[in-house]
Length: 177
Image (tube, rainbow, N blue to C red; front, side, top):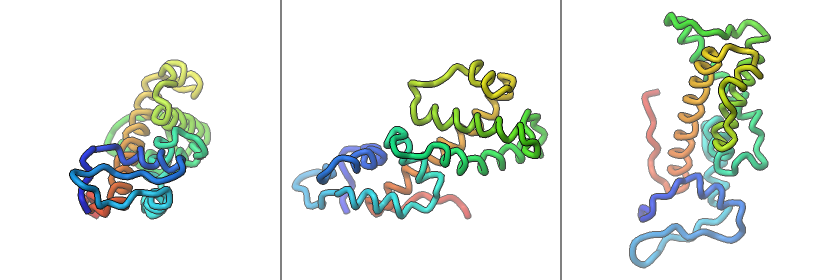
């Protein structure tokens, strides 16, 4: 299959899924590429294997409409908790301890802030106010928020690559397993 001439963000196609009709991917010369329909895009999203990447891609593409952002935060929590545990084992001093219910609640608030910042970057809340709402010190909040944001951005990039591979048949870049 020919590679499209315009390098569009694959997540734009997910957003176009909401519009009826079909969308013809541009190509050089005379086009023999079949138009993409909403069913093609929905099928590619449905075949994505990584649930966090799928939820992140759909949430960003649809700007949170009809998407449960809380479920994305819950799915992301395991990855961020693993990262916190890894950093704690390697000598980093993080303020959150996952064996305490209050810290787990703070973790949920930080994750929700990270998800909201990714989906709606124009609605970003000041770090001081967000830390105060989570009842955390600003430095601790920023460290955990940075971990959550990094994990979320990685999931989004993985979702872009996997969606592109599913839709256009290109092999996805997979790291060592």
